[in-house]
Length: 256
Ligand SMILES: [Zn+2]
Image (cartoon, rainbow, N blue to C red; front, top):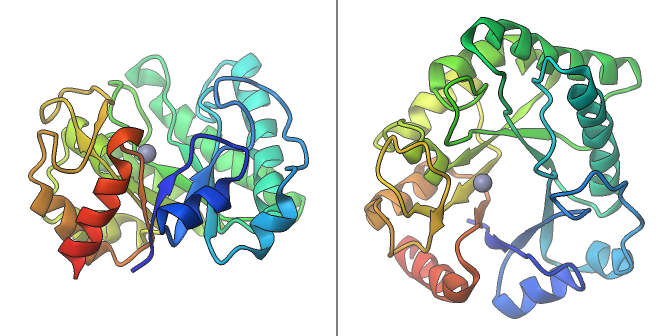
């Protein structure tokens, strides 16, 4: 099983991954709070040559579902630009949060906006890397918090080859039980391409997105290990940086 971590410093991401003993790393291609356009990475050659695999996490401002043109249009462009940057680094996917709308009456249209993202890109030959849609913890009108909503989303986007990223903190804090979670989500999406393995500082169904180190949160760490085992997908830790090396060691030991 390939195990790695999100690398927050962007200077030498795969080098950092190698020194952590990671099999893969996750990175951003722009400041995640910004709408910058990605530039060629100064270490692109090293990243491409590294034995450490790469997945890219898209920036946080993106909301593909939004009914607001002034947010949705730049979001579509950002997904396309960051997917291109991800491909340039040899990444195996681009993680994009499910996003949200303002009220329940907008949910169907939000889902349709996701479909349009894929439809329009299909006309241009599709995305150069798979788009991995990630479940989120919060929001009453989120596209990918509750699994019944993910099922509706998948009816709209599954045919375009959308991938799925399961975040354990988000599922737990979002109110989805982690016992049997892999089977339940695979029954909907048919696939899990990536696991974001995080414990949660907050209680079940708190709707709060605060990651904790594996042994320090409200989720039983054995349950987290079980999710890894059954998902059979690459694992990225997005836990607080101070405890990350310990988390990697814990996981390797637990997975034997
Ligand atoms: Zn995540």
